[in-house]
Amino acid sequence: MGSAPSDARGTPGDSSLTPFKILVAGGFGVGKTTLVGSISEIRPLRTEETLTQVGVGVDDLSGVGGKTTTTVAMDFGRITMGKRLALYLFGTPGQDRFWFMWDDLAYGALGAVILADTRRLVDCFPSVDYFERRGLPFVVAVNVFDGSPHYDPEDVRIALDLDSQVPMVLCDARVRSSVKQVLITLVEHVLIGETGDVGPAHAELSPAEAGAEGS
Amino acid sequence: MAEYDRWVDREAGRVVRPYALTGGRTDPVGGTVLDLISVIVATGPAPSAPKSRGLGPEHRKLIGLCQAPMTVADVAADMALPLGVVRVLLADLVQQKYIAVQARQAMRAQASPDLLREVLDGLRSL
Image (cartoon, rainbow over all chains, first blue to last red; front, side, top):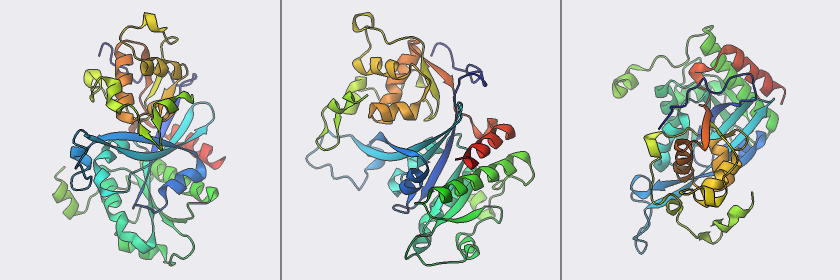
């Protein structure tokens, strides 16, 4: 590449766009797409992944010997603020087999929302582990909708073994004002972490995790 | 921006295998993988076909899309092409200086408290 693009190229303050990225994670079918769609215009983003990574043991290749890639659909939404700020919400693929895509999504992200369904709380564990290891600030939003059992948020915190600094909110992913509050909570949490009022939320890993990660 | 339907039809499946558009290449030239929200912008108008040897119709369409600053994710969604394909095509255009990377995404590490407060104000006023 001839000239490496530098961050200084786009001068802040002119018409340049400053985009931020927030991930929306959680188990398959928990309402990530609903959440993104409640507050932004949702757009489909497709990726083409090689089957060696994605399809092991899943995609039946018999009869399609030439097929080496498969399409993974993700959703994202954009919230434009004024002329230069834009918040991008990316729903992470919920299935385990798309795990490898998370690094790409998480790179440089401002933070993450983990959407939790109390009926399937266990689905959140991988997301919690992932963001804790990466040191990415996150909030847990318990999606409360009709028919879901009501739990005390503190019980959910204990069940997920969350650090006491991790904000936890109840939300209805279908309701714009509720989703807005989730995002506000996240950005406040990031801000507190950055300004040092409260230490970084995930600077410390539990000994077990630190040992397992070795980094 | 609706003519992409001739390439991709959700019901019938794709007519052209996606990486056929890149000549089978799956890695961006120069090894630079653009982030999903890197902001890119065309350095000029899309060249006419005779003047742009080596550029395919998708390359020219990308230049047309990027007349105003766009993020890679928005470009990929507009093109209705897989992200990996768009990244390869964009890298070609960056190398040939048809497209400039205006700004890498605002990394969390670079997000000043002032900028974060601006985001917060923006969210509150939604």
